[in-house]
Amino acid sequence: MDSQQRKRKRQPGGLQKKGAPILRANGQDAVPTSSTYGFVSYFNEEVKRLRSENSDLSVTLGLRKHIGKTYKELPPEQKARYKKRDERMGNSGNSNSHSGDNEIVETKCVPERFCALVKSLSEEKKKAIREIGFESLLELRCGKLKRKLCHWLVNQFKPERNIIELHGQKLELCPKMFSKIMGVKDGGMAIKINGASDHIAEVRRIFQPTVKGIRIRTLEEVIEQLDEANKIFKVAFTLFAIATLLCPIGSYISTLFLHPIMDVSSIKSLNWATFCYDWLVKSICRFQNQQAAYIGGCLHFLQVRPLLQLKLSICLL
Image (cartoon, rainbow, N blue to C red; front, side):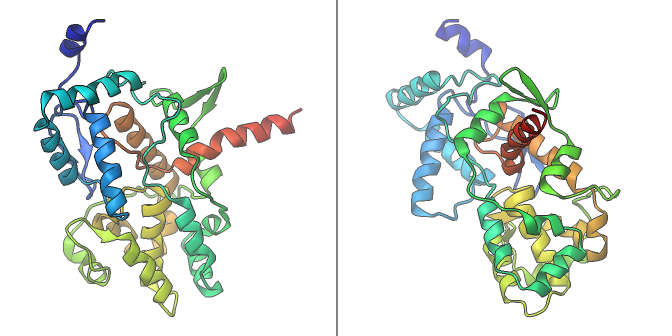
């Protein structure tokens, strides 16, 4: 296929297709701005540069629009350099567009941060975590993600069939498998991220959210500084688990996540396995379709799944 045919075939966006839905920081759908071929490389380079200046940088819709605008204003010869780089990486707009073997995936999943906090908790606080049904999370032993491995596994994932193709084997992924690996369960109640704002107003004020949402560092501080494992502790811990491990988005988490967990006695009754698994699949689909530059789901689960299969295979020998 020559370059003219490629241009006719592609939508005008290396990262996002025109009109394709993406997820805002608050969990709502939005229509992204269009971009041009070569934007993926430029976007990744800009994010890397900005993160070297600010390690807490959150890749928001506003930032994507800003980077998209600066890309459009680049001289043609500079754009050509990024386009050639995308061609070498195989960014042709299909599901294999992120398939470079040495690529390191951008992700918001930081299991090591979650485990470090859990390790510092008192026994009283760990007891409170067990009361809301997250006892298995206390047993997780997480290091940093192997990002090259995660990138490769993402490319092997077939969302329409819920499998990873691995050396001729088909590894099934599903909410039940998510529950087995991560320890969170389906309690029977659907997780609904909506509701009346006055219902969460009092607790919302405690976490001092910005327009981006609740800062993860604020959640850490609340969890560490509370003397007793009360309702606020349970809410803060649940939000922290979502934001860093189960359904990570960025440096902030939307206040909409407060709605399903305001009644802390019902947290254990929510369908965590299904919600978190679906979140991961949708995030991978957006990444594969170049609608997002990072993956916002639980990559720890994706990384551990093949290891579990290997363990089972050895046991059967």
